Image 1 (cartoon, rainbow, N blue to C red):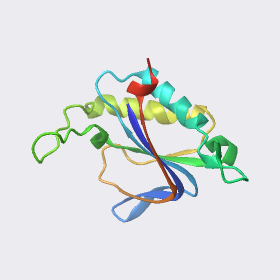
Image 2 (cartoon, one colour):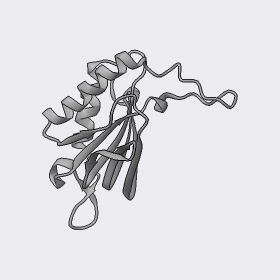
Image 3 (cartoon, rainbow, N blue to C red):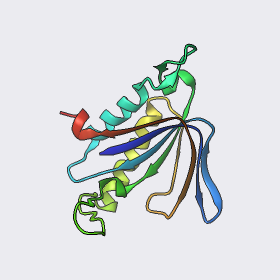
Length: 150
């Protein structure tokens, strides 16, 4: 499981010129799954995201979590996080989990974030979406369950 996390001042998802999800400030998450991912990876990454101290305190140091600043989450499914572009000019997506399995894990991930006390807005799984955000900092992290779950 991979999550590209961006600290943002605002973020939204638009489908066919209609805003379907929006947050005022917090984190925009692009979320992807691969073969072998399970609830174990989902729980580990949800806990990691909630606890990350990547928001600035009164001294301008990244020392506060999303919960401490009252931020929200915009979570968007993103199978291309597992693209393999090493060969040729067209990326391969064979490392991306099949959509029927990935959708269940994506829903579980968002549910776990909510259970941890966060307000979560989502895109539409599998839809063609436009994502807009103002990346604050910029602060961007790539989280990979292979590096966090042993």
